[in-house]
Length: 184
Image (cartoon, rainbow, N blue to C red):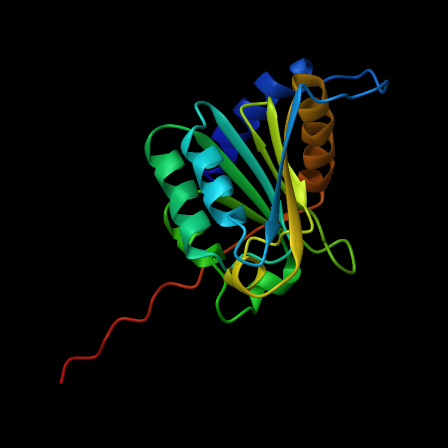
């Protein structure tokens, strides 16, 4: 429960700044990446590594160690990182949900929908990573995927609004601790 209070304080600061205007959301710049082996993971990690204040994540599948490690690094340098995952990550064998939650990142599960199929990161209220690209090793190495990095505060504000809608019906993720080896 202690992890909720910093999150609520952060949301009270961010919510008033979120755009209420639903007009055009033209980004100021767009970077496009493709997979397999097109550098999506590297671009995602570089964007996370550049974050200064906040990272909001929504992910359907989250099994990429480099992306999880980048999120933990961001948290460790003082960036507020909050993650909402699809309920399938509760039973996924290779999920990175445990990694980030055990590192102290507030992690939530969206059980309301048949599939919480979003693949979104909102960085510092100014950049949005989105597209078909799941945050997985398979998406980088094997799948035909696309990823966009969109810059624009108004656009990012709309994504934050949507992120907050999903947070309201999500549950706290409880990580499974790593097994303790038994002595010989």
